[in-house]
Length: 112
Image (tube, rainbow, N blue to C red; front, top):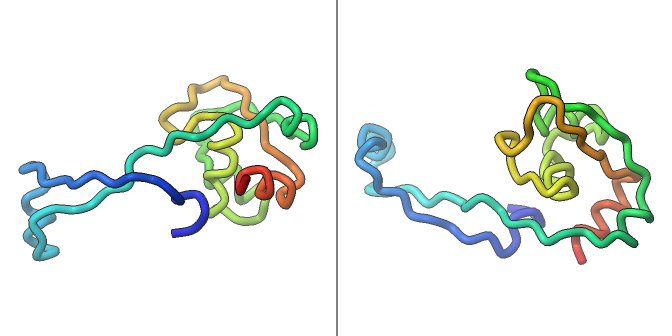
């Protein structure tokens, strides 16, 4: 699952609302990863990075920003971690997000 999911807990979902889905998959429940809780990044570590700033608009998604700045939409979680907003739903229109650069340094800080 990659380094972004290390230590994440799961939750069993057996809600009746998903009964048709369960039947189509021949299962009684589905395991979901819980929304991550990110450890904060220190001020010293923030100063070791260059921040590109982006103002969130209605069409923005983390994966789109990761594609634009990193060339890989799969690294969306790095932007989420750095801004302490684990999903797109945690970002409001007009919020300013910091995009941590260079990518290699940001990944090193995340792995600590």
